[in-house]
Image 1 (tube, rainbow, N blue to C red):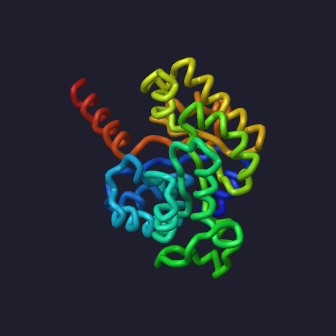
Image 2: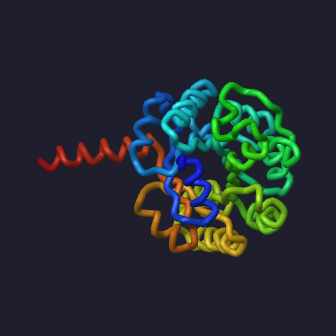
Image 3: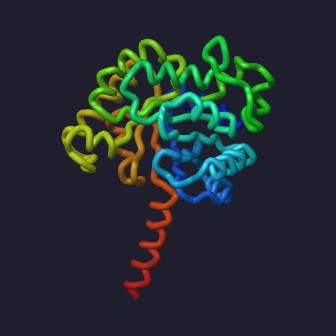
Length: 255
């Protein structure tokens, strides 16, 4: 069983999932390096990262070659961005700042082939071998995640899950944007944030859908797990590199 199938099963069963982020290093070898570890997938961030379209395509191609699910956080919920990202080989899409049913409707339409959507057919890397030329298998093999990052998103989440539960692979929290929107800027440990995260996860768990959050590092994983999350989208290549540099310099300075 390939890693995409394993990830789909974990999402369905709400098992613990670990991913990491690539947002600034476009060298495709970084994907090969990440694939050597026990990550369930990698998030390529083109919302806040500096990776170009060409750079993202090279990373996604390497994901396919290494059998590592490649999930792209897009910059906005726009049909042609979603469709083009899938054409480049993305196995999944994360839509940021979701605050309406209409955004999810747009994403589903752009991601799925008819009759579940209106996606156009094209792109050298659009199809996986296991899609077998079947639009039904293609639709089932592409993962859709939404990010809830505001009170407005929280309020509409029950309606979104009522209508699109079967089209979604999971619900994720963007903690830093959420902290700003909740009035505790960048304080992701505030009482307001804890309450917000708990409410999002509770709604998701009642609907039996995977949920989680971006986490800065391993120390925060138990916090999000305790609040009800199972999907841990952990760190970036830059933060992990900085952590290693800091560890090296600290060890050197103690001698």
